[in-house]
Amino acid sequence: MNVMGKIGFLGGGRMAEALIRGMLEGGLVAADHIHVVDPDPGRCALMAETYKVAVSTQYTPVWQCDIIILAVKPQIMGRLLEECSADIKPHHLLISIAAGIPLEFMEQKLGKGCRVVRVMPNTPALVMAGASALSPGKEVGPEDLAVARKIFDTVGITVMMAESSLDAVTGLSGSGPAYVFAFLDSLIEAGLKVGLARDDAEKLAQQTILGSIRLAMETGEHPAQLKAMVTSPGGTTIAGLHELEKAGFKAAIMNAVEAATNRSRELGKLL
Image (cartoon, rainbow, N blue to C red; front, side):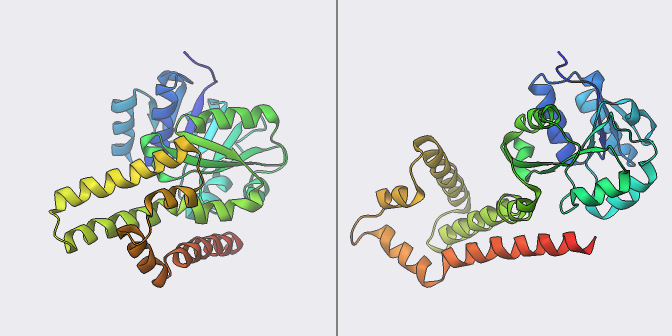
C-alpha cells in the first residue's frame, strides 16, 4: 500500500528511523518508496537491512522524491540548504524536524516558491508515543499540512499551531521527556532510600507514572481532581505533597519549561 508519493530523508538518525517505522507500520508508504541519505555507511546499511528502504550517502536520489524530510542536526542545516538549494524545487514538500531552525531562515535559503513545514517532535516518537507540533511556511497549503500531519500521526499525536508558539512547545514537550525521566530517576532513588530493592523500585516507579498518565488521559479529569482522589486528610499523601510544596516542586517545573523556552528563542536568534 502506498498512500503517498516517494519520501526522502536527508539524515537517517533515530527520529528519521521512528518516522520510517511509523509510516511502514501505518501503511502510509511502501518501503520501496522511501529513500534515506546519510553520510554514515554503517547507518545506511542498518536502515536498508532493517526496513528494506533504499539508502545512499549522496543527495542525488532524494530529488526524485515528492516529500523530503530534513532530519539533520540544526548546526548543519544552513550549509545543507545552501548546497541543495538548486536541486530543491517548488514541487517538493519539505518537512523540517531540525530544532530551532525558523521557517524564515529556510525559506530565505531556498528561495521563492519553496514549501516548508516545520515540526517539533519529541523522543517518545521512538516508541510511537510522540507529541509533535506542526507549523506551515508561507507557501504551504491545506493539502500539504494534511500530508505532514498523516506522517507524524503514525508516531503519536499532532497539533497545529503558529510558529511563534514552537519555542514554548520545545520547552514543554520537546524537553519535557527529560523532566519526566529526572522525576522517574528520583522516585527510584527514593525507593532505594526507604529500603526497596532496585528492581522493585524501578518497576513500581515506572508503572506508577504510566498508570497515572493513563488515568488522566482516559478519565479526562483535571490533574488537581485526580490528586485529590489520592489525598486523604491527615494521610501519607498529603505529608508527601507538603514536602514537595516546601521544596518548590511546582515552581521548579514551571521554571524549567520557561528556561528551555527562552533558550530555544535565543538559539533561533543566533541564526
